[in-house]
Length: 340
Image: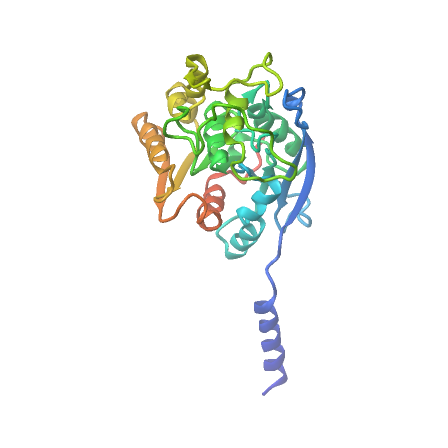
């Protein structure tokens, strides 16, 4: 065996056995002016987890598209990173060539009642503006982003899927691609179908100490987001049923915050998107409303893709992120700097 062969073989083995490069995750605080003074007393300084791809530290002149990813009810930003296996999936996809290098931003929307619903409310704060303006502005000013809507995506699961279609409908000026995963709350009829948890007749206590209590206070979170009342302390919201009697105005407020009710008002905005995709598991209790969203978008001629898959509400999330979500944004966002 020649020395040349040995050296060559050693070099090949070293190359093939070398571990794939990994990105880094930064845990930062972002102040939300839009969340200041919320009646729940939640901090306007939010934890945000930022995934930076492997080349970010060394390619100093490179700028990157950004995807904003919204977690579901009962999760925190930190738990969302694990729930979606986000950093590991991104590293894996980049190494496999199914995803180009992007920045991924994951804000913590855990509130007094375990979730903001990504809505605009005096009680919880204006989460729509926090995501689309405060957070985007901070990321663009502190990281090497491509600060253009064609290089920004928005996605999320469950409550985050609701936030994606809700904010996406209104803010086509900020984002160009949407991925809606198993969206909750597409049609809000307290006591009826369409919600994962119906609003209670009486307000439960706030979430106990320790975060991430799944569905402990979903009804109160919805009421705080959709039926704010600054004159009704200490909860500062109204419930759709009082003493067993439905409250028509409050029920109407819930309906008004239903994306299936809102879509036709925002068709012009939705048609501005470069790409929209949605999915839901066939065994998910939210499958029917997600299919209805697909049908409404189709009826109004909004270009989009919709898939169902064998699975329930949560058991395929990591897999979908790896195989669908991250490649979707990689294929549809612009990686070219905008010339002004």
